[in-house]
Image (cartoon, rainbow, N blue to C red; front, side, top):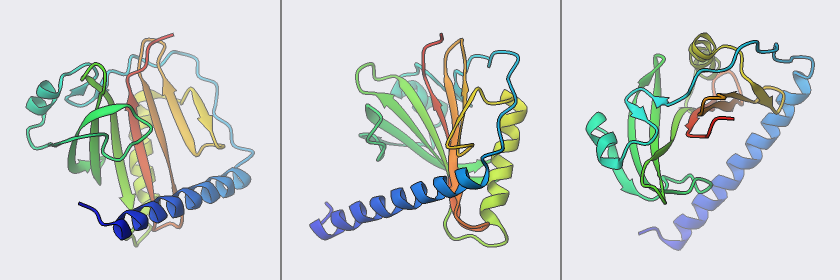
Length: 190
């Protein structure tokens, strides 16, 4: 169980990271105002999950698909997501170290979100900027031009009319240090 001092330290760390992200997003927006996404001419295909993790799987089905993933009660620290259970695994994706968190909806107990984190907090040799390129390139190749951006490119969205949303966000504080998240969410089509 966490002591009060450790809980306070975790809260302070969350605040510091949030402020740093806000400042980084503002800096990015100010330096990249003239960049805009080209207009997309075709709809994004259905986004039904990532790899063996498909939206709607039960906890048991997802555990069968990836037995090495460790399960925990709760939302794995993603307080804004209404999750009752989480599977977590570390792996390499796009040639980069990553952590995958698979979240299950509190009401339906089915897979609803997949969050892939690429943290570069001990970087060198342009670890963060290389990771961003390694992550973004295959996303653009597979899904094409994003349907929407926020923060002048700090957040990119691929929203499918057939269902599902993919989002890429994060920042490099320096060429070496930063983080990126690829998030798959089970959303209805429109």
